[in-house]
Image 1 (cartoon, rainbow, N blue to C red):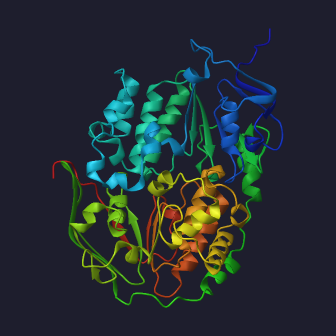
Image 2: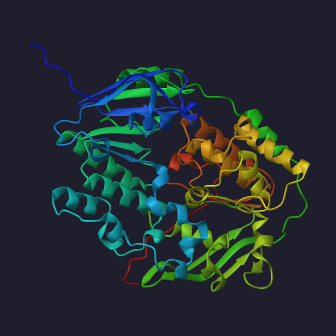
Image 3: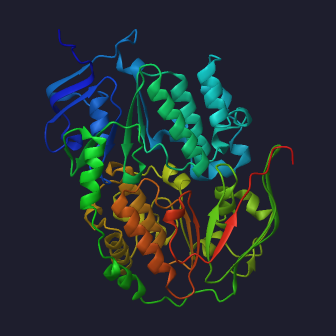
Length: 490
C-alpha cells in the first residue's frame, strides 16, 4: 500500500482577489511534511506577496488553499504558522514608535520591557537553549525600545520559537546578526529541523544565505512563482547563470558629478573626547575617544548591542545625550551655536532604525527628496533642479521606475534602495551607512557596494560604515573601529 504524503500547505491555481497584491500568474505549490523550503528571489520579485497568500492573509478569487498541520492538535493557521518579518521588529508598538524615541529616556517610561513582551514562559530544554543562544538573561529587564536591531531579532526569534509552531516562516533571519550569533542560529535551526515536526520556510534575498538544512527552493521573479526544486539542483543552475554586470559606467557617472562649494574646510570631521553614554544603570559607551579625519573611510564593527548605532546617533545629533558630551563635528564644538539642521545638511545617513521608523506612504520621489532637507516627510517643495537630482540618484540605485509608487507598496529591499538614494542626494561630505546592504539581493548588494566605492573616490568624502559581513565593505576602507560590549557592572 502506498503511503499518502502529507501536504502541510497546498495551493492550486491560487489567484488573490485584490489586484494590487496579485502575482502575475496563478500559484500552484505544495509543501510536504519534512521539507524545509527557501523562497528566493530578487528585491521586489513578489516573495512577500507569496507568503501573504500562503498564510491566508489575502482571500482568494480563484483556486484552493488547504492545510494539514497534523500531528498538531489544531488545524488553524494562527496556532500553526508563525511568520517573522523584518518589519514587525517592535511588535504592535511599531505604530507609536518614532525614530528619536530610542534615544530619549523620558519618552520610554510607558514602553514595555522584554520580560513582559515574552509573556508566560514554560521552563524547559528549548527555553534554556534559546536563552543561552541569544543571551536573553541580561536583556529581560531592558525596555523594548532600547534594544539594538540585532537584539530585537533575538527577542523575536526567541518569542516565536517558544511558541513551538508547526511551520516557522522567517524573512531573512540572518540579517543584522553578528557573525557568531548567525552561526549559532544556523546550528539551532538545523537542530530544530531534526527534532519534532517543525517545518522551516525561509524567505531570502541573498543567495549565499541558503543554509544546508534547506531541502527545496521556490524561485520567485517578476511576480511569477517558479516550480519548487531541490536545493542542489537550484544552486547548480544558479551558480552557472550568475554573471557579473559591469559597473564601470555607473561608477564613472558618480565620479563625474559636479561639486557644490558649500563644504566645511576643517581637517577633523568628528572628534569625541571621553564620551560616555548611560541609560539608567547601563553603560553603552564608556569614555570613548575617537577622531575621524577628513577623507577617511571607517569600518565600524562590534557585536549586537555593543553601541554602534548609539555612537552614530550621537554623530548625527539624533541622540539628546549628544549635547552633554564633548563632541566636535567639522571642527565646531557641539552646542556652540550651530543649529543641528546646519550640520545635518552635510551628513547623509541610512540605518535599520530609520527604516523601521519610516512608515510614510508618500511617493518614492518625495521620500528621496526629503533627504535634501533632512525632514521625515517633505516640508519644503523641492525646486525643479532638485527634483532632477533626486531622479538622477534614483536612476543610479536602479529605482527610477518606482518614483510615483507609494513607499509602503515597495518591497523592503526596494524601500532600502530608496532610503539609500535619500542619503546620497545632497552629495554629503560625511556619509554614515549603518548596515546599508540589509535585505538587498545579490545583484543590488553588488551594485550598492560599487556605488559606495565610487562615492568614496570623490574628493574629500568621509565615510563610516557598519556591517556584520566583512565581504560587504568596499575596497576603500582606510580605518577600523571595533566596539566591545561594556558589561553591566561598569
